[in-house]
Structures are given as C-alpha cells and as structure tokens.
Length: 328
Ligand code: AGV
Ligand code: CA
Image 1 (cartoon, rainbow, N blue to C red):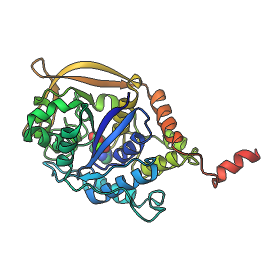
Image 2: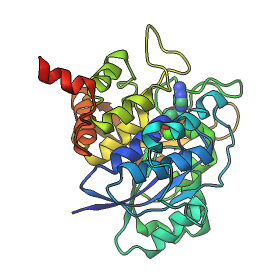
Image 3: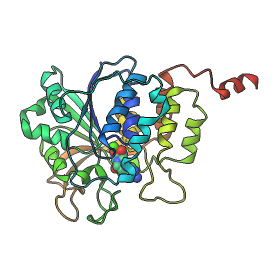
Image 4: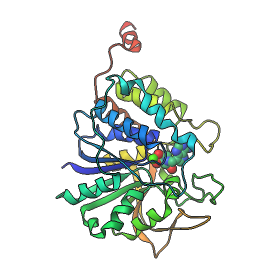
C-alpha cells in the first residue's frame, strides 16, 4: 500500500536531496511540499524544489508552498547561501523554465488544508524546524487525528549538540534550536513521533570516499545531482568543525522508505525552553513517548541511495567515462 506523505523541509543541501529521493520511492505518494526559510533562503530553495520536481518527479503533479514562519534563532548566513548554488545547478536549469507551480497558501495553511481534505491519515516528514506543524496544531488541535505519524530530523540526547552560537550552551540540535517552542507544542500533542536525532546521523558524515563513489557514477543523472549538490558543503576530514556536513535529512528520508537500515528504541522525552538550553531535548520518565533512531547500517544506507538515484533514468551516453568503459 502506498503511504501518503507531506514533506516540510528547510531548503538545505540534504533537504533538497531528500526531495529528489522521495520522488524516486515507489511505495509513497507525495501529497505536498512546504519550504521553510531556515537553513536556506526560502526564495531560491522554493525554486530549486520546483525544479527538482520538474526534472526528477516523473510527472508528479504538485505545488510547492512557501512558509512564512520565522526564526527564534536564525541559521548562519554562510550555510543558508547554499540554496542559491543549488538553484543555479545547470542540471536543474536545462529547460530554462519552471512548470511546477508555487502553492497559493503559505506552508502551514497548505499543510492544514491537505490534512483536512484527506480521508486516510498522512505521514509527516519534517527535515527542518517544526514551526509550521506547531502552527497547524495550535490553530485546530483536532487536526491531530489526520496525522498518522511524524518523522522528524531533530533533537539529540547526547551531551553535545551541533549548535555553536554565543546564545546557547551547545547542547542543542539546530532544527530544535531554531524554534524551541514549536518542539514543545508538537511534543504536547499525541501525534506519534519518530525522531532521527544526532545519535544516528553522527554515523553518516559526508566523506571524500562517499563523494568519490558518487563522482565515479555521475553518468547516472540522479547521482550526478547528488554529487554536485554535496559539492557545496564541506566533508569530514581530520576532525569535526562547526560546518562539517552529515547526511542528516537523507538518512531520515531513507528511514521512511526502509526502516530496516536503522536501529530504534522507545524513549520518553521533553524539550527545554529559554536561555541557555532552549531547544535541548532530554530523556525523562514524565516525558512524551517517541521512537528514537539511534544507529544506522551505513553500508545498507549508501547502497539504498545509489539504488534510488540510479532507478530514476538511464545513464547519460555522453559520459566520457561510459565510452571508456567500452574501450577497456
Ligand atoms: O541539524 C541538522 C539539520 C538538518 O536538517 N540542519 C542541516 C540538515 O538539513 C542544520 C545544520 C546543522 N549543522 C549544519 C547544518 C551545517 N554544518 N551546515 C548546514 N546545516
Ligand atoms: Ca534540514
């Protein structure tokens, strides 16, 4: 049976690759996409999303909704700028036009309308802050019954998060830190939640080796897109820096398609509010139930990315590498 999915993302490099991968999955029906002005600039991130649907969506008819939610703690500009590079990729601009339309309603209203109209409950995939979902739940708590579950890339229960900003204590994960109150609102609901937090994503850094794996298969347009997209962000070299990139959202999206690539456990958790720990998720017996993804089989994970990205199209015959392989 196909699962209905609404995807709300925040335009980062791995958010956009997640959109690409979702469009290749045969067991899901993507019913909506919302883009948040968080780890990106929302205008180029929305355009890039529409172009990805045009180029790799196999004719999927969708509109892309723009969020008007704004940060409590904004992302660094240096990271957000990657959206302009993504939107400029020649691979996404070959036709010179965009066919997939922008939705008329803002992202939280688009989500609300789609939930209201659906007969079967919808799975929500969120790979950025939870603000749009929190706004939906606040405007009408009864909408909960239309949500099958939420899969969220966010939070961590490790001592160290991935935020290095002067106004925090370093315990937070960024999507949670961007709008801690939104996390609280969502945690207060009874929506079942699967958390893909830093516990599992720390196991899948971007590395030179994985870049090479994609580069050597760039005759497949899907893998060329992935390789080019990750070229905008730094890999893990000798040690982790503040900008080291992990496959956070891509793991979350692949988990949705094939949960057998990860290990999960049941937890009870809550989130802190206010300075200096706002956005810190923590375990507590009095907290809400959630399923925590805490480990990943990275071999299976990278194989799955290859498989999804290769299925999308035949290899490009112009590739030099392709002809070379005939000559040898
Ligand atoms: O905290 C991980 C989230 C994911 O949704 N994002 C990136 C992924 O899209 C924020 C983030 C944390 N560290 C980053 C981030 C970095 N070094 N570069 C860009 N974004
Ligand atoms: Ca993201």
